[in-house]
Length: 305
Image (cartoon, rainbow, N blue to C red; front, side):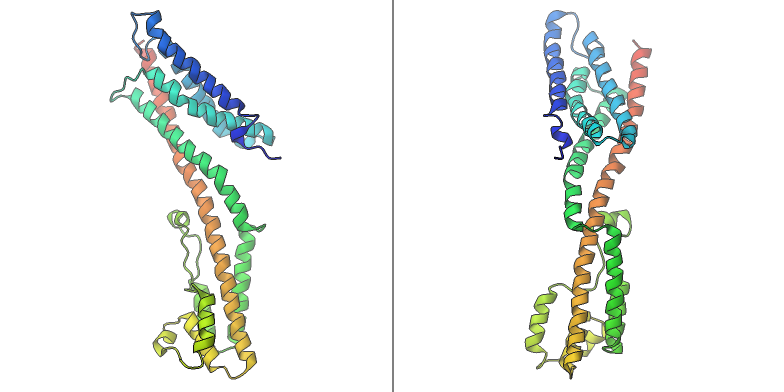
């Protein structure tokens, strides 16, 4: 049975993180009573201890991020990822107590703020990687993105072949619909999940209406000239003289409906993937900025110690 990294070995790393936070809080409260000459700040022995622990955790978390792709054992990866999450969250307590709640416009506070930003983006990453892969799996229904794209291409070819034996006008409109269908695009378009497709919304309802209205009403010529697929299909049904022609038009409508549903699934798949990638585009650069600020913070501390 698959075990989530959040509950790895009955919350082993959560317990460790809570223990670290509890010890840090107890020492922070006890410290002024132990040495009245020292105030709470990062320059005391406790401040250096908490700062050292916090820095060690940050460097380890960064190392894990660089090394995690090399782990072959899934159980080991789950354990390290669990530690990554909970120890990273513990930095909120440890680093805050390290500062002694003394902030200013300097590199020390900058490192603290960047750390909080990394942790916040990490929380978003937890949500993304805990929820989105399951949504992607359900959306794909056992298929891959490439297989869905291949199926769309096959539907396009079949739709064009079917339209070709109906009429030249239907063939023209179908080709135009195929050419106008796009998925993906730039990163922002992928993130929004936008796609450009022929307007086939509520196609089932329109088909029912056509059955009752086609014998008494023709579409406007302007609608046909504008290339509205549904109006052209309606026109073909209303002017069809034989059952075979009606069957072909309905077959084309079925192909377009199946394609629309498939394009929607591809659109969702791309959006889910882009959402996960978006987290990395935020988390990784801020992490490197944190490392630079942290190293500068450490150098400044030891230079003026």
